[in-house]
Image 1 (cartoon, rainbow, N blue to C red):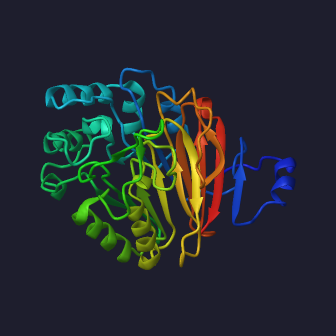
Image 2: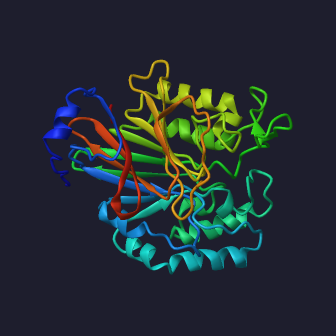
Amino acid sequence: MKFFGVLGSVVLFLSSFLSFSQVESNKKDSLIHADFTIAFGSCNKHNVDNVLWDDVLNTNPDVWIWGGDIIYADTNNMKVLRATYEKQNLVSGYVALKNKVPVIGTWDDHDYGLNDGGVEYKSKKSSQEEFLNFMGVAKDSPRRSQEGVYAVHTYKVDTNTIKVIVLDTRYFRTALTKDTETKKRNKPNAYGKGSVLGETQWHWLENELETSDADFNVIVSSIQILSNEHGFETWGNFPHEVDKLEKMIADSKAKGVMILSGDRHISEFSKTKVEALAYPLIDFTSSGLTHSYSAYSGETNPYRVGEVTATVSFGTLDFNFRDKKVVFKIVGDNGELLNSLEQEY
C-alpha cells in the first residue's frame, strides 16, 4: 500500500474546479492512494547513460513493463543481438531495478532486429528466443513454442486483479504503405488491407478480453494505437485494425481497459470515446528512456490530451481499487512530474 501526501491548500482549491472523474494537470502530484503501481518505458540504448533508473525505483513500482526497443541492435546476427542484451543486463541501474521489481514487456523494431520490420524479418524466430532469454522466460514455458512474444500477466491485490495483456506488433505485422506524396514516411493502407497482430494473436486477444474478470485490463502495444497522423509507425496505418480493436474492447465488457505504447521518443496522452464503452479509451505513450525527440516542434494528434513531453521520461500508473481510479504520470529525471492524467473507470 502506498499513500501520496497532500500538496497544500492551493492545489486543493484548484482541484475543486476540475472534474471528479478526470484531472489533467502539469507538474502537480496526485492525491490518489495507490494500491498497485506500474512503471513502464521504451526506447533505451544500452550504451547511453539512463539517468532514470533511480527515479523508476523511487516510484516504488510493483512491476516494470518494457514497451519495446529495450536495446538498439538492428541485426540478423544473433550473436550480436545476444551480446547487446547481455550488455543491457549489466547496466547497474537496471540491475538494481531487476533485483527489486518483476520485469515483463514486449519488443519493438530495434530489438526485434529490423528497423520498421514486420512479418518479413527472416530471423524473427531466433530473435524471439533471444528476447525470451533476456526476459528470463522459463525454458519449458509454452511461450517457447509460440510464434510471437505476446503474453498475459495477472496481478492480485487482496480481492482485486490487474491483467496486463502484452501484444506483439512485429512478428505478424504486414507491409506498410510508403507515402510518396508528402514528407511523411507512411500513409494508411487501404481500409481492410493488412494486419498488425495476425489471425492467431487476434483470436488470443479476443479470448483474453472476453474471459477477463480483472478490475483493470492494461493492453501493451509497442506502437501507438490512437495517434494516427504523424506518418511514422502506428496502428493508424491499418485503420480497420483500430476499429476492430475498439469494437472488441467494447463488446468484451472487460473492465477498465487502457493502452500503453512507446516507440515515438516523445511521451503523451491520447484519448477517444468508443461507442458502447462507458469510459474513454486512453493510450498512454511513454518514450524514450535514454534519448528523445529533442527537435520536436509539433505534430497533429487529434486525440491528444495536454502537452507533448519531448525530454527523456518514463510512465507510471497508480491504481486505486476502491475508487476505480487510475493516475497516469509522465516522470522525468530527478522524479520531476512532467504531466499527469486521472481517470475514473
